[in-house]
Amino acid sequence: MSELVKRTLSGAIFVGCVVGCILWNEWAVAGLILVISLLAVDEFHRLVESHPIQRLYAAMGVLALWLMSVFHAYPLVLVFAAIYLPIMFMSFLDEIWNHSGKPLQVWGHMLISQIMIAFPLLTMQFMYMLDKHMLLALFILIWVNDTGAYCVGSLTAKRPQGNHKMTPHISPKKSWEGLFGGVAFAMLAALILHFCGWFKPFEGNIWLAVVFGALTSLFGTMGDLMESLFKRSLGVKDSGMFLPGHGGVLDRFDSILLAAPVLTSYAWLCYFLAPLL
Image (tube, rainbow, N blue to C red):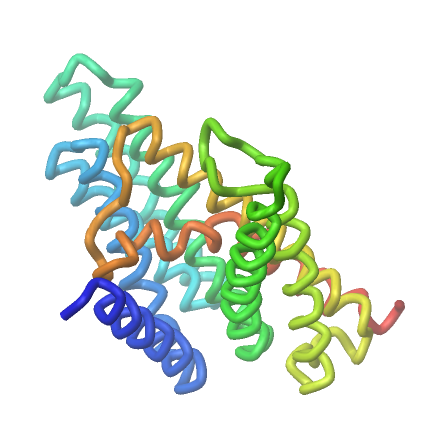
C-alpha cells in the first residue's frame, strides 16, 4: 500500500471518528476528548523522556480534569479539584524523593502537559455544552484553514519572487500569503456555516460567525507553529506515529491547543452578549 493511500485512509478514518462522535451524543464526545487528551499528554512525556511514574501522575491529572469538565455540579467540581491538586503535589514530591538532578525540567514538563495540552483539549467539552455544531464547526474551519493556507501558499510560492515566509526558522513552508489565504477561506466557510444555521448561540449575528472563522484560523495557525517549535527544539519531525502518514496525536491536534480555549471563551462570551449586539 502506497504512502498516499495510507495517508488518505487514515485521514478519512480520523475525520469520520471526530465527526461521528460529535454528532452521536455527549458521552461519545466526552470519551473522544478523554482519549485524545490522555494520548497527547503521554506522547508529550514520551518525547521528553519522562519517568514512567511522572507519566502516570500526568494521566491521573488528565482524568481528574476530565471529570471536572464532564460533571458540572459545583460540589462535584470541588471534590475533583481536591483530587487533582494532591496528584500534582505527589508529582512534585516524587522528584524530591527520587532526585533526577533536573527538578525544574521535570516539574516544567508536568505543568506543560497539564496547562498547555490537557486543559486546552478539555475545553472542547465546554464548547460542546454550548452547541455541538459549534464544536464541529471548529474542526471544519481548522481543516478549511489548513487547506486554504496550503493552496494559496503553494500557488504564491511558484511566482518568480516566491512568497514571504512567516517563520522560516520554525516552519519553512509557512508564508504570510498562506496565512491570509487560510483566514479568507475560514471566514468564507464560517459564513456558509452561519447560513446553514450552525451558529445558533450567536443569535443570527453574521459578524460574530465571521470573527469566529478568523479567530479559528489565526489561533489554529499559532498552535501549529507552537507545536512545530516544540518539535524543532527536540529535534524530531513528528510527535509520534498515531496516524500513518499524519504523525502523532499532537501533530493532529496542534491547532486545537490554542484555538479551543480561545474560541470556547469567545463563543460563551458572544452567547451572553449576542442579545445586546
